[in-house]
Picture (cartoon, rainbow over the protein chains, first blue to last red):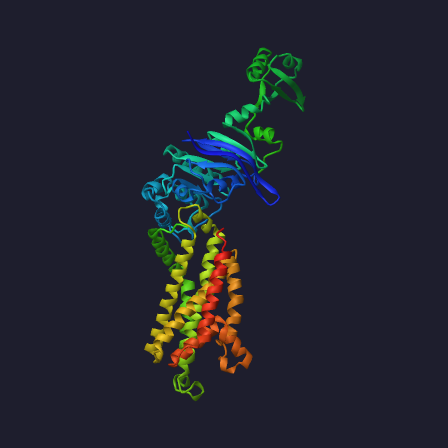
Length: 302
Length: 251
């Protein structure tokens, strides 16, 4: 069942079209990624979903509610973590949760949330004394304090160090396991690949693909790439005549082979038969980065 | 604009705690008027009736009114907008606008906290004056309260207008200073208005700080506050509140 439906969403600011005909549906219980470079239209989409912006055209529904017309009902059931929003410096973790809990009809249990997000030991610490990762975990907790069925997390791990980022990912998986549907807005490939069940790739205001991470990768059939340094010189024809090999060439003593899915087995078998040892053997497969380049026509590089 | 009472109450207690956790701001709010009272209270002639002041003691009819006026003005023009602008800058107003509680509730609780701070600070300043320097009670108590209420309305409305438009705390402080300094100079805080040329006295009379100070001086001496002062404070309040309501940026 779809908990969020966006259909034909348009939004422009003056002459700039921020979002152009964006459509997608988020199913209950999934982690749905909205992936795109900075300025691709992700935040505008989220702001329309949150009711902060009025769409120029198109339909937006969250849990069956219209963000413009059912604002207050929606705010009770949709938890939102906004990009770069901070709370008062001297507010303590528990006080912040206590304060936000008072805004909702059926707030979550504060102790449970503190446990879920590993903030128990920090509950009496002021916001300004938290690390970046802890601040982000608190902001997830604040997004969940109203017991929402859907949580939107916008650029959650931007500015975090790799360790804190991985910790945050673990928290997001825990939150999903507790039954909350998650919309994850990100410009990190690795984050989308690791966490999302499905991803909408947004580029220049439009959705260019919606699929699972594996599905997106499979769309870019660049095959497999293999490289190694042979123990002795040999005739490249030995490889090129294999049906699995599309291309083989030598570059400064290194053999580079591209081909189809069974490439590795075919090449290693023929090398073994000819008593050639492959040193520094490397296999590269297409990843989400390649898929992104293929789908949008430019490199990701945030 | 849903404003639930429990949420507003919680916000207000939270904002009160946060206000008290900024010791520098609280100390400054009390420190300046207390220092003023102490310095002038130690000058014996200030506490004696003076013909220049219509037979009253300048300590009661000039210094105490100044202390009360600057307490209100500093809280209204510099502390209050700074807090709100900081919240806008950090994204707290935006954060609230995706919660069930509209950020106007944060503004209301901040306003309440600063009004309370003004009342408490004035209470402490006056108590110190009575206990240590035999400050006189205002001769016209009712008129004095009327000036207090209209003065707070006028000054806090100006603070609200500043808070409505400045993007961050730094800008709030800058604009606050730019508004505060001419008000102090023209309001008769640095020099009594009696020493101003005539046309400046007319201006001082209608500027909010000058009007409030004149009102306090008149009522402390036992007279009635001038209608010009009261009307000017009310007019400033209404106009700036309306402007703030139109211009307030929640993001």
